[in-house]
Amino acid sequence: MAGRSQLPVQIMENQTRFSLNAAVESWRNELAAQPNLAPDDRRELETHLRDAIAGFQQRGLNDEESFWLARRRVGQPQQLGDEFVKADPAKASRERIFWMALGIIVFWELTQILTFAVGIALYYLFPSLHELYIKSGFWPTDAVVLIIGIALAGGWFAQSMKLMWFLKNRFHLVSLVVILALLLSLTQTEFARESFVLNGHHPSVVTWAWAPWLENVRYFLLVYLAHIVAPLIFLVLFFPAQNQKAPKRA
Amino acid sequence: MYKTTMLTKDLVAASSKPLLLSILAGGESYGYEIIQKVRELSGGQIEWSDGMLYPVLHRLERDGLIDSEWKEVDTGRERKYYFISSDGRKALKTERRQWLAVHNSLCKLWKIKPVSA
Image (cartoon, rainbow over all chains, first blue to last red):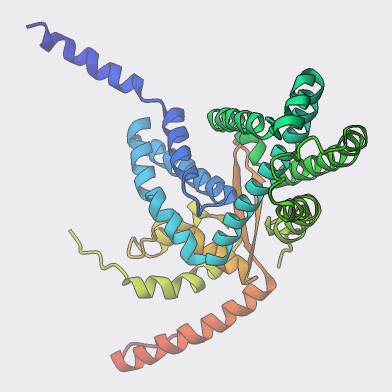
């Protein structure tokens, strides 16, 4: 059989196939899936892993052996997450609230901006829709926004790994929220007022005619809470959580 | 062959604070180096799990006993260095008194020469 003579070649292939960088990368992704580890914790654990790998390499072990020993020594990502929570439960929930609040605020702001943009676009692109609305009360803004939103969310999810650079800095994220809030208040005031004056209705407000009080509640929640109060609370409460204090030596 | 006697979990937890403060009192250090140092000092009897060290360090930092700083080292990589604060030095003095009190009591019971505080 030719199998025996091929064996050394296969072993060599296996050795060259192991890429240290790829292994560390996949370990990093595993760690990133732990909700309890802050980016700074993960960065610190990664430097530890790299130091441990270098230590084993100096003792003459190859890349693969060094990686697996170092990985074992640092600990299972799941266990690490649990240990970090035990040490500081408040920090873990603070992190969780930060991401949840960020998600909700960005989602609201984006859908609102989209709603106004799509409403205005539909209004000018398809004048017949306006007649349809007057007759039937149907206005397709919400449906179109939902479709665009789902498409964007899908695209975001697919690209999220590539967008990681953006998540490194909390300052960028908060800036994004504030920019979106400003953009949103512009669309709220200028476009909406113009449209209201010209056409007698708000381009996005059409489907709630059966419950005007609900529309008022929604309007209050979105305009005052989502656009002004929430980003402010967000800034004040969560931004200082990042450890940026100047070190003082003893 | 010799038999290594490992510390119990409780003793590891209790001794981590004075050990870390004492190591950092001797100069700034980072996680990997600290673990190596502890292993070396104890002759392998104190074996800290690598991932568990960081929660302990972070707790000491939160209590204001140590501070940390990311620093670039000559290889171009970055490491998080820890160093002791003035509160940490005070806490270390207290720890030292307490550990020596326990140590000396045991020494008297076991008829071993005690260490001066």
